[in-house]
Image (spheres, helix red, strand yellow):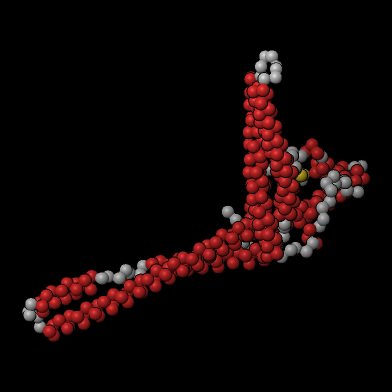
Length: 349
């Protein structure tokens, strides 16, 4: 029997298409994202200009309203040729005309902003559609990217340990030098009073010089350690940014890979559904032919294909009970998760 016509328009067989390499896809995604960010900034600037034009137009209309109200309020009951009134009326007319010119200028700017809004929105929608259309990559690509993420995380951890190690460098202790200075001050005082022994003073000065040298060396080491920590922190910031970027790429790439596989699975499902219709038609036709000779078999076929025996999407019959229920969907979802995990892929949170 000819299979029932599928009302859904057939889609191209994505499994036969060449899948773009993941690095090229990610590069294109980054390029489109940057273009969208630049467009968003232009849209923001144009929105500010539109708001300014609207405010200027409203202000000009208010100035015009006030000028007209003044004319009506101060107009004489009996128009005449009073020179003072005529001069005042001319001034008010000029104020009305000036306000109308400002309103027209603001309206021109507003129209330009609205036209630019429309053009920018069209550009943005096109770029967004281009970005949404990106799809591809392979499981091998994902595993490679996953290795890169893990390596970047390991590097951040290594930098953390180095920073902690060098940050623990002890600060130079000046106490020994200060203590020797106290002793030296006492000996110098004795020497000045003629009480000190020259050899004792000379020995103390050598000890003090050595302590000062040690302190200077320790100070320099502490300074270098501080610079080293600063350099390591800069490197860590770069690596952390790289981890964040790679993790973002990983989430995007996983979505692409799943979408590509979903497209292929849709085609498989479509083909299977069409085959099911074909086999079901054969069952119905054969059962019709055997109604008189194989009534038991015909009843089995009727039980298998009778729509009244199904609830929602369900195929039931002797030895067969398939139903699309929440438990079935959960099992199907977990099966797909397990398949990815068994392939060595960590699913995004």
